[in-house]
Picture (tube, rainbow, N blue to C red):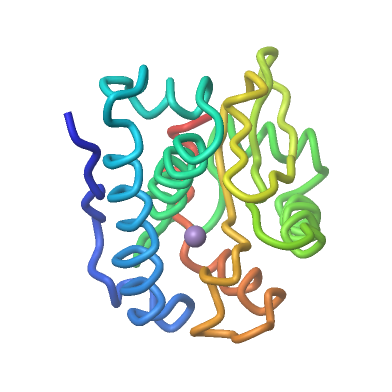
Amino acid sequence: MAFELPKLPYELDALEPHISKRTLEYHYGKHHQAYVTNLNSLVQGTEFENADLDTIVKKSEGGIFNNGAQIWNHTFYFLQFSRNGVKTPQGALAEAINSTYGSFDKFKEEFTAAGATLFGAGWAWLAKDASGKLVIVKESNAGNPLRDGLTPILTVDVWEHAYYLDTQNARPQYLKNFWEVLDWNAIGARF
Ligand code: MN
C-alpha cells in the first residue's frame, strides 16, 4: 500500500500569524509531500515494500530511513497544532512536566534551548522512557527517539525549511512562535 500525505485537521492559514499559510504550503505541501513521494519510490522491491511507517523508522537505514522518518516526524509535528488549541499542559502530563522540570515555564526554557542549540538540521523532542520518565532529546536530520525505545510526545522541527519563509535566519523567533500554536489536548493524548 502506498504511503500518503496525511490530511491536516486545520486549514493552511489556521496557524497565522505564528506559522504562515505560505510556510505550510511549502513545509507540508512540498517538503512533507516530497518525503512521501520519495519513500514510495525507494521501498519498491525491498523488504520494506509492505512495512508500516513505525517499522521503517525503527529498522531501516539510508534513504528509506531518511524519507520514512521524515514522514513520521512531520505528521507528528503538524498534528500537534491547532487554531484554537489548549494553551497549557493538562492532567497527568502537566503533573509530569511540573515534577520533572519544576514548572511549565521551566520546561519551555529547556525545550527551547534544545531546539536553539541543535546544530544544523534536526528535531528536538519531549519523550518518555519505559518507566514513564520525561526526557528532552536532540536528534540530527531525520532522527526519531522511537529508535531508542522512547515514546515521542512533542517535537519541534528546526530544519531551516520550517521557518525561513517566516523568520528567515531567526530560529529563536520561530521557537517563540511555536508555543502559540500547540494544542496540549492533542499532545496530552500521546502521554
Ligand atoms: Mn520539516
